[in-house]
Length: 268
Picture (spheres, rainbow, N blue to C red):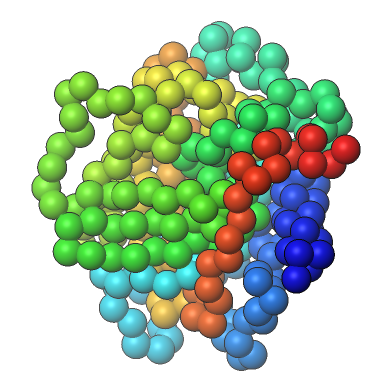
């Protein structure tokens, strides 16, 4: 039993540090996607690509985002495809200081990636580039995102509250959400400066403001537009488009970075 657990954990780590695309996980926790459950809709896009509206398919509730979703289309060696940010001088300077291992330029011993060396939470939106699924749970007062990666939980309050005036900076920020038609809009502020925007080292400041727009276009497909604004790090907003596939027969597995302290030590 213990041997199986260690081997399984090592496999998760290997997938993470090698920078595989987010769709590389085809059978989490020993499960396989249900045959014939192929996603409908458009092929993966890169960059800004607002959903064009509902896609024909099995009936679904556009306001119901519940389920286990896995990103498809990949991130391109840890980034958001070909969409690069327009950085300020400060942002450029910080980016040059980062040593990402996802592109192969630096080894695990040389990287200063805070996720790999310190087991810090990835932050938003980098969390979507970690090659693990997420589960969305909806309640009357909040929408809860349960990311399989490091058992990260994110609470998006939908009870009409505003961001606190004295918000405490955190890794995942303070999130509030509301519906605009069939689009679920998530507004997040209150980040610390300890995370990267992606897995290749684009940095941000505590002024980061992230807006996510989720739209379930059919039963199996969820589309997400992300807009990142940071006057200190980004000269203009950075917009990216992601797509997710529903896996109704998947469950979220336990994956905890803290068990290993850091990925570098685990590999030794």
